Amino acid sequence: MERDLFVAWFEEATRLVRADRDRLTRLDAAIGDADHGTNLDRGLTEVLKELAGSPPESGAQVLTTAGTTLIRRVGGASGPLYGSLFRQMGKALETPVTLAGFAGAFEEGVVAVERLGKAVLGDKTMVDALAPASRALALAVRDGAEVSVALGQAARAAQEGSKATIPLQARKGRASYLGERSVGHEDPGAASAALFMAALASVAG
Ligand code: ADP
Ligand code: MG
Image 1 (cartoon, helix red, strand yellow):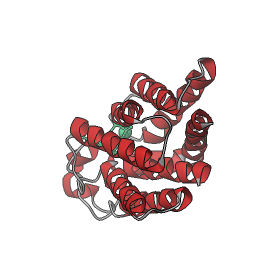
Image 2 (cartoon, helix red, strand yellow; image 1 turned 60 degrees about the vertical axis):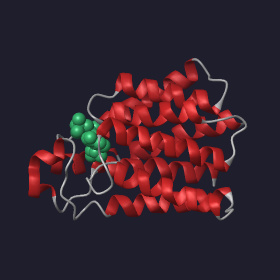
Image 3 (cartoon, helix red, strand yellow; image 1 turned 120 degrees about the horizontal axis):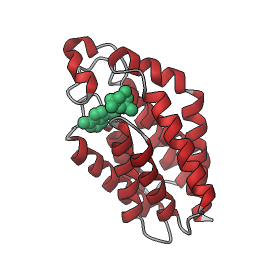
Image 4 (spheres, helix red, strand yellow; image 1 turned 90 degrees about the vertical axis):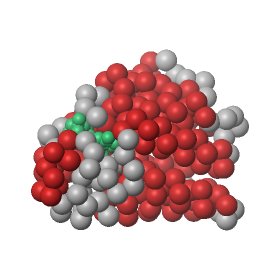
C-alpha cells in the first residue's frame, strides 16, 4: 500500500511535468539552455519504466530507484540534484511511513540538494521551492495536521517559493551567468519542484 502511494507520486509527477513540459522549457529558455522540461520528462519516463520493470518492495525503495534513475538519465544540473533528493529520502525513510517520518526524510533530502548544489534560500534555484515546502511540512507535523492538510500546505509553500524567485537574481547554476538579466523570470527548477509537491498533495491528500 505504502509502496503504491510512492509509485503513484511519480506517476502523477510525470503527468504534471509532461503537461507543463513546454512551460518549464520556456522558463529555462529565458535564463538557461531551454532543456529543463525535456530533461525532466525524459528522466521521469525512465523512472516509470524502471518502477514497472522491477517493482520495488517499499516506499523507500521507490525513492531510491527514482533517484538513481534520475542521476543516470537526466543530463544537466537538475538530474543529480533531484537524484540526491530522492536517494537521500529513500535512505532516511523508515517503515511504516508516518507523516512525521516522511517530513524528516524530506528535510534530509533537501539538505542533500543544498549540499550538492551549494545553494541556499534566495539563490533562485529549486531550493527556493523545496526548502519552504519542507518547513511547511515540519510546521504542519508539529501542529498535528492531517496528512492532506500538511501536504496541501507544503505544495502551496513550494508554489509560492517558486513564484518568489521571479524578482531574484540567480546566484547558482547556469542562470547565474546572466547576472542581472536573470531577474524577472521564474526559476525552472523551482517551478518543477512545485509540480513534484503538487503531485504528492494530489495523490496522498
Ligand atoms: P542545466 O542548468 O544543467 O541545463 P536543468 O535545465 O535541467 O539543468 O535544470 C536547471 C535548474 O537546476 C535550475 O532552474 C535550478 O533550479 C537548478 N539548479 C541549477 N544549479 C543548481 C544548484 N547549484 N543548486 C540548486 N539547484 C540548482
Ligand atoms: Mg537547462
